Structure formats: C-alpha cells, structure tokens
Length: 74
Image (tube, one colour):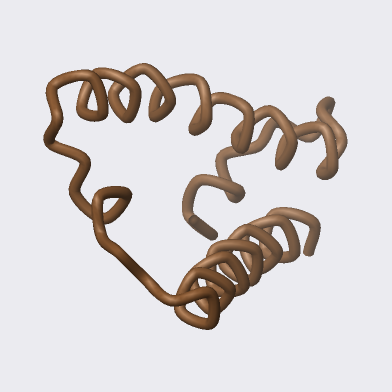
C-alpha cells in the first residue's frame, strides 16, 4: 500500500486520499462477498468460530486498516 499512497497527487489531502482508497476497496469487495454468501460459498464467514476468534479477526482487520491509513498519512 505505500506504493499506492506514493501515487497520491499533491493537490489531494492525505486523509481524503486514504478514505477514498478505503471506500473503493469496500465498494469493490462488498458485491463479491455478497455474491459468495448468496452462492453458499461462505468461506471464512461459514466457519463456526468462537467469540474470542471472531474478536481476534476483527482486531486484525482494524489494525491492518489503521496501518494502511497511517502509511498513507505519512
């Protein structure tokens, strides 16, 4: 992701750029995820995970997003 953030034009703010990239990722991933759930190929969403494992996965996802935002900001 630092390579992508280095492509940011200087006329666009860093936080706006990071938000735009994150929104685009969600925009492209959400339809695919919905399609997979509808086809019953739930993948990781079909697993019967404990509450602790789900929390760990959520924490990892948030930390990964925070690292991308920080790298785009710096």
